[in-house]
Structure formats: structure tokens, C-alpha cells
Length: 133
Length: 249
Image (cartoon, rainbow over all chains, first blue to last red):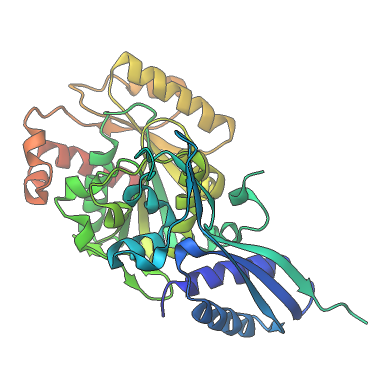
């Protein structure tokens, strides 16, 4: 099982800390595309882990976020397509997204001092528990 | 508020659970560079493992990792196994993790938020086994890596401070001692490195911390870095062995 499981464990732990009952109507996760998370595997891991914690989850929704970068030196903004990268680089960024600073420079001025504006990480946007009637 | 400390970041919830498999955590710290943190952390870990303790070594210097140089390995050849997370590779009976596994010798310039992100990512995805000891080597200064360590795992860690008897280094370590004491972190003690005596014993008494020992200066030491067998035969190894006996007794 790949490392998406470890990320799912963190998400479930986060949900458990905010637990209101046993029925999770909806969880919305924002997923940065930089990390090339396999959403099917992540969803499977989440379902299994929720089950283990006696939580019934009705809907898992993903919002994918594009990668955008902005150079701090020359203000140039650009995007990258992570799928076209060498396997070694892809794997490094998959596990630790900030290794991008080892592999990419600003295409305009070659600076490595740039901001990863969007596209990094996993964030829990919404947790909606079934309201008791 | 930055994203990583926001309520939306699930990694914060798992950090302590991940390290629940570790019995004792030693964080090796010094605000001053060049006082021997990395050499000490690495040899200290190797000796713990030689004494039969299940030991992990985590290199937390993201921009300038160098424990692999002391170990004499090319880190990119030691990929972790993926098993519901990353299982650290085993090197000289150490569970070992460094970001250099992914970046090798490439530069990795990082601003603060990136450091925070790497810290949380590593502590989320790296799965240590049931360790007796996890030794964490830190970069110089008192900045993001140290603050994250103290904030997230400081309460379950023991801090080993290291300095040379140089007045500038002592001044730096004094600032760190004050910072740690203010928040009641557990200082395991102070190591005096590159020294021809035990000059800092009195300093430790005055500051109410344990003097863990002195490591002599070895003018030929540089030629031993990267060769664990040569390290094992050095006087530095023997001195650190005495410190290991003290902290594990």
C-alpha cells in the first residue's frame, strides 16, 4: 500500500478530533496537484479507515488545485505539468513537494526563490456531520 | 494565519501519533554552526545501535543535510520502502531518514513556510518502528525547524545541547538554554566538543544542567568522516560512547 494511506490516516485523525457523531455526511478535501496523489487510492484508504473507526461516510469530495508558481525575484508566474517529469523527480515531489526547489528554477531569471502559490498539499475544506433529527 | 498551522491541515493531527512508537527522542541542538552536531548525532546513533538499542536517526537539516556524509553513503541509493507510509531504510542497524534521499547534493533553498511543510510532511509519512531511541540532528540557529520540533514534539523529547568551549559558541548556547528553560523543555545535558578539558562543567552547574561529557579535538578526524570503521577506532567515538552510557543508564 502506497503512502496515500499515511495521508489518509492524518485526515481521519483530523476528522476524529472534530467528531460529532458516527455519520459523516460529507467531507471535502482540497488536493494540490503537485503531489500527484492517487485519488482512487486515497479514497479507498479513507473509506477503510473510517470503517475501522466506526464512522459511516456518505460522500468524499475532492477539489483539485492547479500548480502555480511566482518568482520572488522577477515576479514571473508560471505553471508546470508534473506528469511530464522524470520518474525520479516526480517521486521526490510526490513524497516531499518542497523538493521542487531542488529541481526547478524560474524559467525567466533562473532564481530558485519563488513561491508555490497554489497546488501544494491536502487540506480539509469541509466536514459535515449528519444532523440529529 | 498560514495554511500549515490552520485548522484545515490534517497533518498536525497525526504527528504525535506517528512518534508514539518511539520510547525516547533525543534532539541534538546548538545555535552555533560548526560545533559538531552532525558528527555527534551520527556517532551517538551508531553507538546506541551497537549497544543493541533499536535506534533511528533523522536528519532535520533540510537545506544542508550531511549525516549521510558522516555515514559515508550516497543517500539516493537508499529509497524508503512504501508501506502505508515510508519505512526508513536501514543503514548500520539504524533506521535512517534524510531529505537527501530525494535531493542528493542538489541545492534546496527554502523559506520558512516550506520548512514547516517539509517538517509536517516527514512526520506524517515516515513510519518509524518500535524504537528505543530516535536521534534528531538539527541545523544551526534557532528557527523554523527548531520551533516546529519544540512545538510539536518538544514535550516528549530530551534535548542534548552541544558546544565548543569557544566564548562565542558559549554565548549562543546560553541563549538557547534560556529559551528552553522558559518553556520548561527537558534539557538532557550539555556536551563539550573539541575540547582539551572539562571547561564547561562549572558552566553547567551554574546553569543547572547536566554535564554529559567532553569530546577531544582530533586533528586527523576529517580523514575518518565517511568511514564508519575508522570512526569506530577514533578517540571521538570512545568519548561519545561514554556519553551514550551516561544517557542510557
